[in-house]
Image (cartoon, rainbow over all chains, first blue to last red):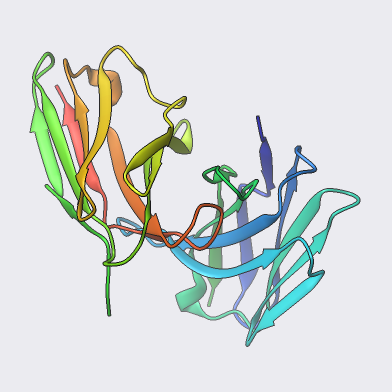
Length: 112
Length: 113
């Protein structure tokens, strides 16, 4: 089955700086890659997603890039703010008839 | 705005007892997923349904777990008998089709003593 690796497990950045979280996946047939943000005690919430026919997608301060050849995708957050502090999960899906395989998560800490 | 709902939000039970968790997907969504979250294993897919039919439950311990969709507005996850290692947060998610955007419920926090 699919395997998703996520790095780093913890990331601490100064407020206003950029943060980058990286994921790799194993199954070249995967074609859908969402990112979820989870605050302590809350549900995972979708923040951005990308499909395999697109190399990059941007939504205000958040962007995701996908390299299908290398089988990796990354989340970029610019101009980080205190409310960006949370655990971020990447995931991959085969589409069609399959659920999401998640990475282990990255705890992002924004230092004031 | 429309959200996935789950009940109960918290459950404390003793080992050996039956546990039933319920999920109401977003109206109109035809795909329902069950995930389990623990510190050690992270978020794991347990089972999912499309148009109320089970598509995959390979992530679920078959001897004690069962998942059903009695109708389009209700999904259930049962554990019988429960064990301490089942302690986790169980999330339900729904979407319009498999492999596309999934919306998570608030989760059921289960503690088995």
